[in-house]
Length: 211
Image 1 (tube, one colour):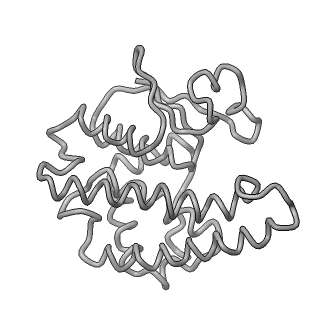
Image 2 (cartoon, helix red, strand yellow):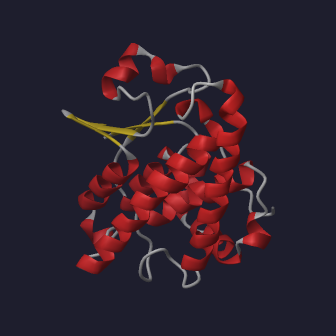
């Protein structure tokens, strides 16, 4: 399998999951700053020009929830997707909300306002609304992590995605440690895992847990 990623993007979640699952894979870095996501070669993989992309033989997958599911299915013994129906539904509930609302509306509005409106004069209003969605979502995440992991009592495909967003919260200046204590504890728990440390090292990035 080949994972096309950009350091610190949501592809980090898939990267962590591949290591957590113990699967063989190859990393393919996509330099977003250089515009490699717009290249003809990458657009053949994902016409949307986004990471992550997971490629294996004739299979090319986009969208983090789908990629996460496939990775989990390749290593059922790791139980990255719960075995029970309710647990599976909770995972899907988390991933749909995180990817569609917190990521898509929140960070999409804040970092990519041009996706919502063409008029530059309206971009500050879109960015402000995006930040509102982020902060509302982050408060909800913190409440839901009061018991530890996102679903059940073990790591699932949801938890690495939450670590990515925890890191993004620090990037936009939110006081993650003081404002979201349950989520901070969750981040520390994940940072203690070998899979997470290996992925961060491979992408040459870090998670600021002091702020």
